[in-house]
Amino acid sequence: MHISEINIYPIKSLKGISVDSALVEPRGLQHDRRWMLTDIDGKFMTQREFPRMAAMSVWIEEDGSGLGVAAQRFGDVFVPFEPDTVNKPQVTIWQSVCEGEVYGAALNEWFSDVLGTACQLVYMPDDTQRSVNSRFDRGGEIVSFADGYPLMVLGEASLAELNSRLAEPLPMNRFRPNIVVSGSDAYSEDDWSKISIGDAVFRGTKPCERCVITTVDQSRGEFDGKDPLKTLATYRLAKDVMPERLESLGVTPNAVLFGQNLIPETPGATIDVGDEVKILST
Image (cartoon, rainbow, N blue to C red; front, side):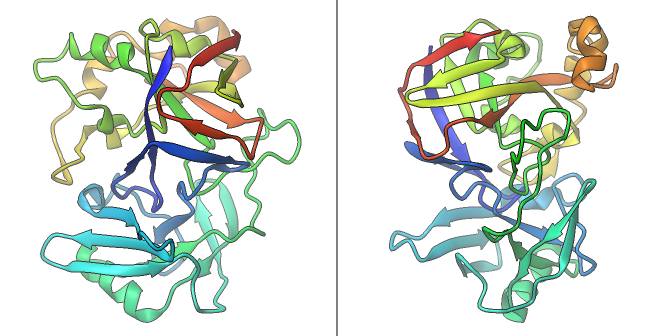
C-alpha cells in the first residue's frame, strides 16, 4: 500500500490543496485547517450552511508569506500567515471553545461579500491548545480547526466500491481526506489502529462519521442531491458495520462511516506521495 494523495485544507471548508509532501505537526499536517471563518459571534461556519465555500480556491504563496484565496466574481485576496491585529476572541467549533486571532476589517469584508453574510477570518495561533476528544486523548493531544481529529485517511478501494453502487461516480474530493491510500482493500481502514507512513506513525481513533458536506459538489459549491449519504446509509451504518464497537468508540448507531480518523504520534516527520503505508496493528 502507498500514499496516492496528500491534501491539506488551510481554511476550514474551503477548497483543498493537493501537495507532494507534508510536515506532520502535533495538530495535523502543516497549514491544515489553521484558519476558519466564523460569524460575528465567533461560531464556526462550514459548507453545511454555506456550500459556496467549497468553490473558494486556496493556495500557498510561492514566497511562503501567506495564503491566496479566490472566489468567482470577487477576484482574489492575500491572507498573511498571521493576522496583524491583537484581537483574540473566543471562538466556538462544535463543543470546543478556544482562542483565535481575528484578521482585519478589509479581509473580513471580502469574505462577507463572497458568502453574503457577516463573517470573520480567524487564525489558530501556536499557543492555542484545542484538545482532541477525551475518549482518545493519551495526554495533551491537540487538533486544529478540523471537526474533531487531526487527520482523516481514506482508501481508493473504498471509494471505488461506493462508486460501483452509484449511478454517477463521485470524485475523492467529495470526502475531503488528508491522506489517500492505494492498494488497500475496500473499507480496511475501518480497522487500522496504528499505521506507519514513511517515518511517521499515526494512531487510528474511530471511523469518520459523514455529514451533509459529502452531498456538496466541490467544484460548483452547490448541494447535489442526496448521494452519497443515501447510498452509504444502506450498508455503512455504524450499527451494521461494527455493532460490537459502538460503545467503546462513542459512535452513534445510525452514523454513516467512511474513512478513518488519525492522530499523529511522530510530529516532526514528513510524509510524501508514494510512501509505503504499513499496518502496525488493527
